[in-house]
Amino acid sequence: MSQSRREHQIDKLEQALRRAHTVKVQEPPHLSRAWADDVMRDVRGQASREPSFSEVARVIWRAAAVVAVISTLFVGSVLTWTAGQSDADFSALLTMATADPTFSTLLPGEP
Image 1 (tube, rainbow, N blue to C red):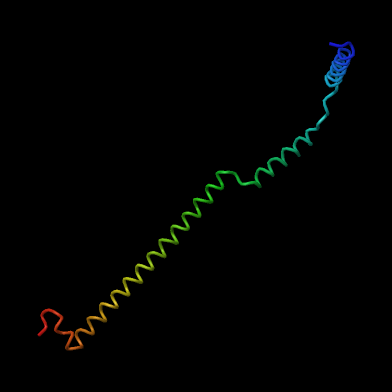
Image 2 (cartoon, rainbow, N blue to C red):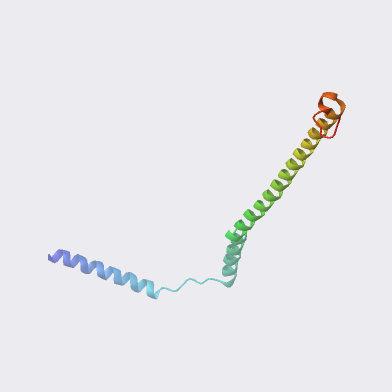
């Protein structure tokens, strides 16, 4: 190892030790209680504004429940409507069968 390189490393070590000593003897900043309270109030305010994971899950479950209720109502109304349509078609067929003599031969028990 060359002499100049060794001296350079020693200089770097001395500078690092001086910086470490300066940091060690430096007084910590004085933070007032009011400042700490303000910071904590800001942190709580930000935390209350951002939705947490449990709130997101709750919203998803509520939306799923609303979709299920609406789907059930829609399917029920479609089934009711189609049941009414088939009854109407059947009653129209019976009316036609009893009114027309050619269809009356299709009904059992009719002369």
